[in-house]
Length: 173
Image 1 (tube, rainbow, N blue to C red):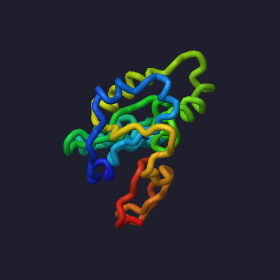
Image 2: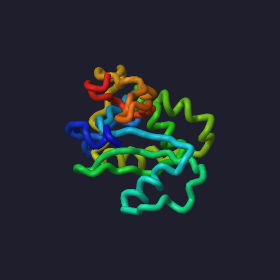
Image 3: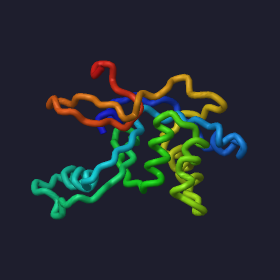
């Protein structure tokens, strides 16, 4: 969430550019996301807790039992936006943010999805319309490789927190 709020954004890809990509090129596409896009996975209902606190509640949410949540973190203007996503969308984003091509990620997901195709077109259209995607690169790895998305960084109180996004600010190295 911190990175989503504080990172700079670049000019996003528009839907016209996205729609002009030939079908045969998608397997070799590397997706370059905005620096503010990340994912998070927890065994606990962290998004529910965060929303509850954001609404100004002083008491904890009524049900704090373990309930796994996978979350897409982004930004719209100056507001951090967190959205619940399913396991397949999480795994797709995890691979793409980790520097794999769309074809490589889809190959990894094929066993899990079987004959049922995930709604890739709808997801990509949503990400492009939200300004989450900067560009697509083809037939090569992106020039600006993302950092290890499983990197670890120190947070304010000195504890360790895992990070699932592309960049860490210079002052936290």
